[in-house]
Picture 1: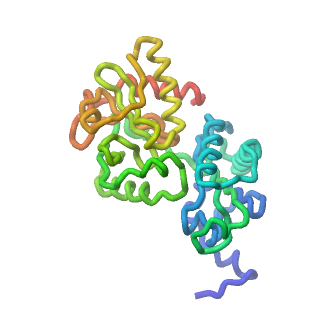
Picture 2 (picture 1 turned 45 degrees about the vertical axis):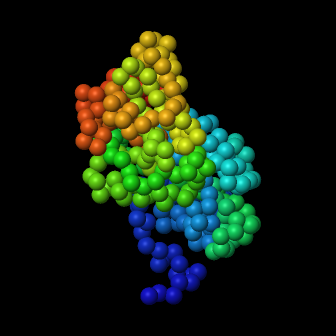
Picture 3 (picture 1 turned 90 degrees about the horizontal axis):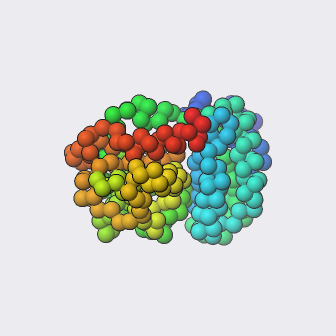
Length: 311
């Protein structure tokens, strides 16, 4: 075991586990950007590390432009306000720093992760121990969308992990323990997607995705906004759905309570998110959804999303 000092620190650093997948990293602690994954580090006493005390947002960058960036920035600041985290940067400054990070990474097609933390200060639990908030921004590689790899759609299962209480479900905090446990459960079950249900038995959300249905009488429905995160892709799909209503393709768009029976009996079940895009569910817990193939509404929403993004 080495004794680490300033003189041998850089030489002793291991290669980043993510390696070349991480293109660039900004830290407000030194107000600079690095493209060396070895240097993409956060202090151990930052509350985001040992308490999950911070908020984050992820956005899709295509051809050097961040899709729906305003909605992501607005959500980041709204969530920071919700946990009493006053950010010393303006929305414009966060946007500029984000775009500088993407540019430095040299990959105009990527995913952008913005993390606003309570900052370093102590290993205690009190937020007041942290003198100054910290901002971390990462540009990293995006894999193929699920439907590009599985055009037949995916399998959805029900999680045994309790859904987050509304106060926490509606905040995109860095405390993702329940989300991580759902991902672990998903891997053990060998399915493609997993979703939670709330204490009343209504559909909630996946670990990193929103879930919705299309009823057999043509209504696009997502859960009520008080017990899930306001996913930016979900909100765009709701707007697209309203356009489909105007075209006579859908009968309506609703935010309502959705039971497990509603999921089983749906014409379509949709999984939507920034990096999952729009996915069609062919099977829920052994029940075939619709005719077990990509549904027309999922296809229409994906087409509209691709067109807006410019892909």
